[in-house]
Image 1: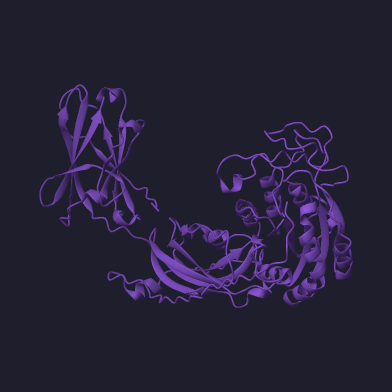
Image 2: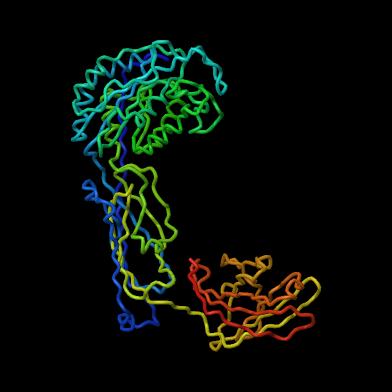
Length: 542
């Protein structure tokens, strides 16, 4: 690969802080008196977040609004928007492992690193109070009996007999002089083809205990390279055609067995071990930078940068990239205590997987009181959590008013057969109520016919996403619904329980229901209406 010359640059990311404030007024219900609400028993429920810890770095993080006071009927929901603001997070303790390709095309970047290592370490000390350094290097495998694996064959052995796929030059140490000395002693080797043993070197960042990462340190690998790893589908991360760069034979050096390394598996291993990858790309091929950026982006706060187009020094480049690494790892989401976890419904997004700080992150969800929740006052916190670390919390005081169903009182239900043939049976149902309420399509749904799911109906009202019965007008005090059944003779030998469900507020996706059970015997002749049984079971439909 070509020799690199010294070039660098600077990238600044600014995320504008947004602040949201939302007034939280008490839910108004005209038919409920405030004095009646206050008579409800009070149950105080507070979550305990002891299993997590507040980060001392996040004192300025906020959730807006930071509190909510509401009164709700059981099974009701209200839409909620929360904005989580997280300031820039400085790393307090970090281990930086330099990883460098020492094949012959890398002699320019090796020289730059030697010339600037003192400045690099000095500048990084301004970012992180507690730093330690280490160094690993590699050329490639030398495989005397190399054959053709996964469609790649370039030259005998990948590299020369003096090359190594991995070496530990200096374990992690707080004595920066040890790493400076190790860098000064770097000597470029050979390499015979384009791809090198990047996968093996990166694999060892979490597999070799001799590297000696410190406990509770932010682990960062700065990888210098000008090409790609050996891999049978090297561009898989960014899609496109399958291109082979040969197999990485792993620690045993034998291609084609279970010890082989795939770059995506190695990157997954780094992410699982919370190791950030920063790749300094020194090659001319654009696709090389793209795929390295894809791999690095799979690790916590990782990224790749093109050294050839960077307008500053190598010191500036490394200072910037380390400064952009967040001390906050893992997906950002909202959580509450286990007792109230099912109160948060339809959280969108479920989590922010990749984010840059400072930043404001918006979450939308429905706050719902589940069925059979104790009446009274419930107090709990909803917290922004990142990798089991509490970022910020807000406080909720929710009064459960109990179960409320505004469905009208049904005082009479009539039904009879209006059509009967060998292949079909139509039952007409008429509902009457004392308040002269006229039922709409959005309120009546057939849930199931016991033992015969094939007879569920699929007529849909444009306002409501539930299967509905076909409504027929039947006077000012009632509505008629026709239910069409096929192959009626299948019911001749048993009583069929047909469950009808009445819904309220069907159009907004959340509803109460009231079930009616019709016990039907199929007619051999035109039948008279059969008894109707009301089922008292109720449930939440969100």
